[in-house]
Length: 457
Ligand code: NAD
Image (cartoon, rainbow, N blue to C red; front, side):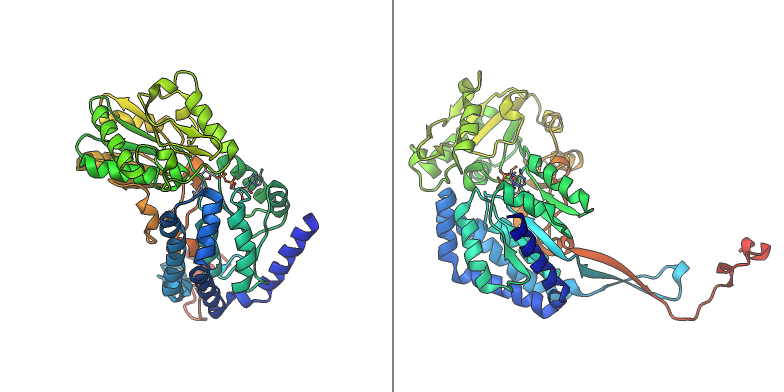
């Protein structure tokens, strides 16, 4: 298997070294082909997502298919601007000269993607890598096997196979891929594996982008439109793959006095959206596999936690389903508040004053997203100033990721590097500094002998 992997990488490197991928026309043609693939194979993509996660069709369309399409369209619209060298000012020390920043492809890049948005998380980085003129190998997640094998089947029907390839597999295949020399590794997944990726990359000084997760908090002030806030929190948590999303709300912090109203509003909204028997709802994804199901139910069965459940808690082991679950007054040091939940459980921590939420958030590692619901502008300013997170969104959930003018990525434990829109192009480019001079403008003081007169200048 190691030899097969090495042969794939060698072929892709030969493709890159042929110079083909550097041409604007090649980049454009590949992105157009990917867009065509998405349009023509949408039915198969939706079916694969349903097989892997029982993802509701509308979610598959809104959160994966249409977003992948938008990435292609945005790149096609902007590519001419992105590839242009960026003229910059000359400095007095280089006068006369011209200066520019030239974006050049890094070479052959490895994209390792995760199971929760298995289509988008593979296509998005490929679009960035190709836009920047790189050759790519994609390793989709083995935990979303239907989407992984669909990639292996359909991508070669559309793109240049000598420069864009799919290698399917699990840990052994990924380990073999990581033993190869890459010019960039783009990894989406958890922090434990990110450390393996980074250690492998270090052997060749390969730069990495690590798109990880974390405990994304939602601070809820009492000065809000409660009905709208409840709808946005519910759809941002359970309407995104049933909580199995990297920027899903992981826990809520609100005041003791406001918590009862908030819990009532969340319960009412949940019942409106998913009915009295949420396990039977077709609008909720299932848990990806038994290990994750077990991990989540163990959190609920933890000593002293089950009596905190104020809504939900039902489960169906055979169907790998867990109902949306709210837990109230969960102590900040309980296991459910330690590691990322990545599922349909939402603990609520209560504090005396809403500002006390800042210390709770700071007691944990830096999250991928931080959310605040408030009409209080001063509180909003303090939140932006005091809380460090990959991204931030005020009065909504998850939407910041769909603005291609904003970078998407983590900080600290939630990741390093970012992508989306031009940030994807930049993530896969080397910014080469190019200074050009003629033969005029000689400054004698530069040259030896360094006479006392010259030293006075
Ligand atoms: P996963 O199990 O699909 O793993 C991700 C990738 O790592 C897979 O391709 C897998 O084959 C590979 N992998 C697993 N173990 C490995 C090993 N020992 N050595 C080498 N490669 C290995 O996904 P996951 O890690 O369960 O994903 C969930 C995590 O990803 C969560 O923490 C979530 O927040 C994060 N995530 C982040 C983003 C983002 O954009 N920032 C998006 C989705 C998920």
